[in-house]
Length: 241
Image (tube, rainbow, N blue to C red; front, side, top):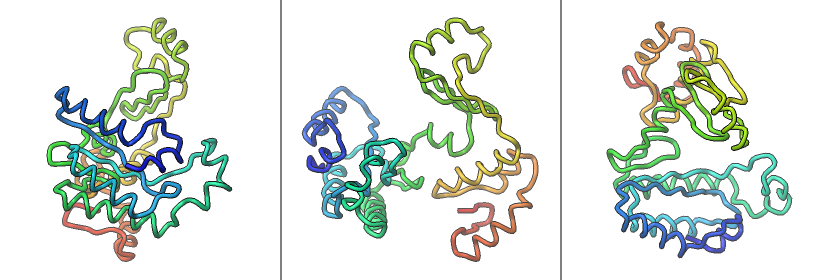
């Protein structure tokens, strides 16, 4: 909700555009809307975020994602880091923004169910929850990713090449237009179980690990106990979070 910040980060829409678009979707009967917020943006300060959160909770979307800015190699910010860097909030300010967002959104009745995600009960993102729990998903279209069994594939990025590969493929191929393919080992799958599962606020279940991999997570217990002693992980009966 700051045209100044939107312009700084190169967005082509305005605050008014967003408000009008949101209202249009509501008028058309969409019952479930997600809105993304980014913290740690150039020239962003706490009062900017407070204003955004206040106005957004009045609009009452069912789901809100709060992401911390990450600067990817090759992006405009990456290439202009000498000019952009001094405009970025420092780490303490950015963390303060995150914790303010969490407090404000949970106070508004939303559940903080994953590191970056908040929702009213029943509106949690089913696709993302499936990904964080290691579930299967198909990705259709150029550049889309899929994960079936332990095969992770990324489609070619060219729409023309994608269409050609799909048309010439057999009907039984899972990944007819894949450009890259990775088959996860047992060890990699186990580590991803922890890595993704710890994104969830309620954490992971050791019995779920046993059900998925047909063994107990005994070899990971020394590391788990170390993290518990460091105050970074909590154990609540069967769950680790």
